[in-house]
Image (cartoon, rainbow, N blue to C red; front, side, top):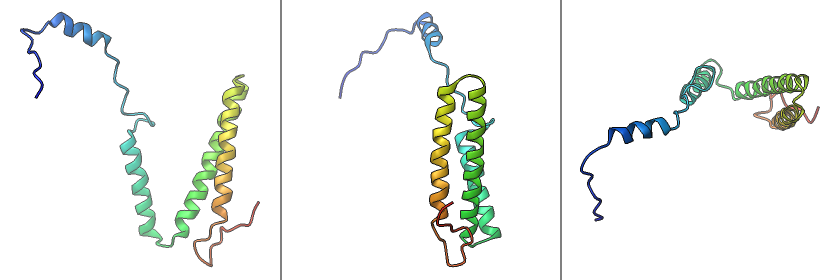
Length: 124
C-alpha cells in the first residue's frame, strides 16, 4: 500500500482558483433538448410500438428506408444551405454523406426479408 501525505489543511483560495479554471461540463441535453439516453429510449419505444402493431419484419425495413430517405433529404437541404452561405467545404461534406446514405438505402433495397417483400429492387 502506498502512503500518500495527508494535507494539514485545505486552501479555499486554491479551491476557488481550481473551480475558475475548470472546464464547464457539456450539457447532457444535446439533441433538441434530449439526452442521448432519452433519444435512445424514444427510438426503442417507437420500435417496440411498431412491433406491437405489425410483427412482420417488413415494417422495420420500410421504416429504415423511410428514415434513410428523410436523413438523405436533410443532408441535401443542409448542403444547399451551406453552399448558399458560401461554405463549400461543409456543403461538400454533407453531399459526401448523402452519397453514403444513398448507398445504404440502395443496398437495403437489395435485401429481402421474405418472398413477399415489396421493397426489393435490383437497382434504381
